[in-house]
Amino acid sequence: MSGMIPRRLGLCLQAAASSHSAGQSVIRRTFSTSPAALSHIGKQSLPFGSDVVMTHDQTPIMTPRVPADLHSTTLHIKGPLGEHVLPIKPFVNLSFEQEQGDSLLSVSVHDASIKEQRAMWGTTRALIANAITGVTEGYTVPVRLVGVGYRATLEDGENNRKKLSMKLGYSHQVEIEIPEGVQCSTPLPNKIMLQGNDIQKVKEFAFKIRKWRPPEPYNQKGIFVGDETIAKKTSKKK
Image (cartoon, rainbow, N blue to C red; front, side):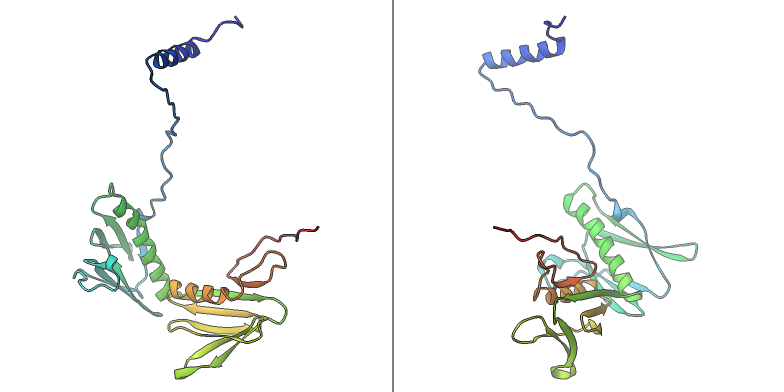
């Protein structure tokens, strides 16, 4: 029995031999039959409170800020902390519903089999959710300065606007003007708190600060955004 070739292996060898004799190369590839793991975030209804007012303007945008927004519609989201204006792709549908006293927003697309529409389905829902959180609760991003002598203070800038002044080990102080829509405070000399209703603006300014002293792994010093950490490395010894 030990010298006998299993029937299945024998059939595979015969097929390979016949193909080789016919002058054809045999290429076998194995493919996974498990389905792709999809988040389906776009299908989830989006609840929002009575203090949020959403207005969907169906007029197509003909003079867009960026070319990708051409023919898109406009969604206005207004809340206690401000207002956001989001461009909505023409193939994205928004429907507002009332369920047990709560307001719900459902997002759908014309044809989910098209890759672009399927990709923008969840993206649109996430952008609207971020805007709702921004106009109701706002966003807070802490920035930590880790290093000997690293300090941050707020000073008066031009046009009655504040600027952030930092000592980061250079021969000069680093001064950055605080953008509109972002509030900045320094509760501690080595800690900066950024607040705003637009998460993109807040984090963009946070990483603009970070680029002056990115965290380095050997002494673990630098500017850390949020709960950012970095793995410590040991220096190479000769």
